[in-house]
Image 1: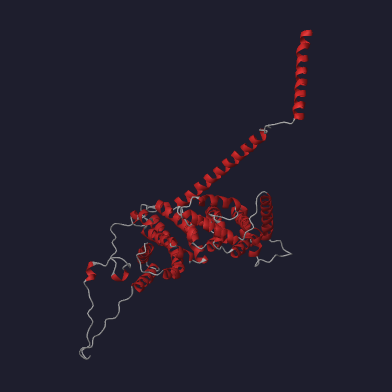
Image 2 (image 1 turned 30 degrees about the vertical axis):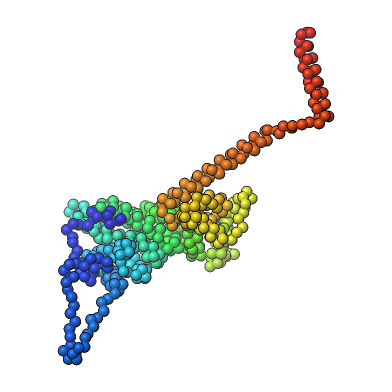
Length: 479
């Protein structure tokens, strides 16, 4: 867990005493507060025998929601120590929820996710800058003990938030742009390694970026990365822009590797194509032209995204470009590239169809068949791996990554090893069949009986051969 990695960042002298109002739901109440009881006051003017009911205690769910709201308010405070304590409280609440020991409703987390991440995206840059400024202004120009405490808790809170898939998926694209840019810039900040536990902080930044790519909304993530490759990555000097582009490209490549699975899960292709068109349209701006003249890798990455999309959906990609009207007077780069890539894809598909049996079943039927095969494998049926291998050979255009990504690493290894074993067995079977065909062709069947005429002809041929051989042996002696 990230808490273990950052254990050394927490000063041992700091011991925050939680008040009952800030107690995490599910935690044990302090002994001192257990003996306090509330005695309802009886109204002297009330008739005797009339009993007053105490007001009902708040429900655990309401208490958890109130604690979450108070913690968010504390974390948003302008006072840095107060903000850090609020983030610490948020970490405890999120950790309890992940362990299923909290009464907090997931709807509360989802509804507040975008607001929380937006606030933290502002805090993370401020807290790191403050830690770096304090380090550089000290007499020794070194990090003092406890100076990275705020860095620890802001990353911890972000990590717990993006580890919960419902919260991560609820973060909007503008907020995702902001937090991703802040984290990438921190990864490039050369002062971060000099902070207290700087190496651990860099590792945490890397892991956090991976969690965002893994759990955030796929469409919002792609749109954010396209923005970072374009206008969002134009800050700083040439060296910083180049390094920032390289990091953005690495993140984009990771997303492109799972593009087929993302499409299966409902990637908004129309929004992606509009963003690509916007990127290509920005090439006419002088600042963008100057930037790409120095480093054209962002443009090549965007062209790769287009190519992979065309490979995945073929000419159906035009159905996602209805909001991009084709102009007759003006040459549009997006249509130039899409026309080229779809024609290349069509040629490859035609060649493969001529050399293999074409599966004409509906796409939904194939998906249901694939889901049934994985269910077989999960239930321990040995034939399931053979069926999966056969499916991958018959339907190579149907990805299985979407199903594999929902399983453990050990199960994924079991599937891959099983498919490799099936492939080797298939090759061995082909070699055995080919060798049997060769041997059967070389061996002519022997006839068990001949007609009288055939026997007479064979005897005559044998006599002729014998006579010829005798003449050949006599001729050297006579000479």
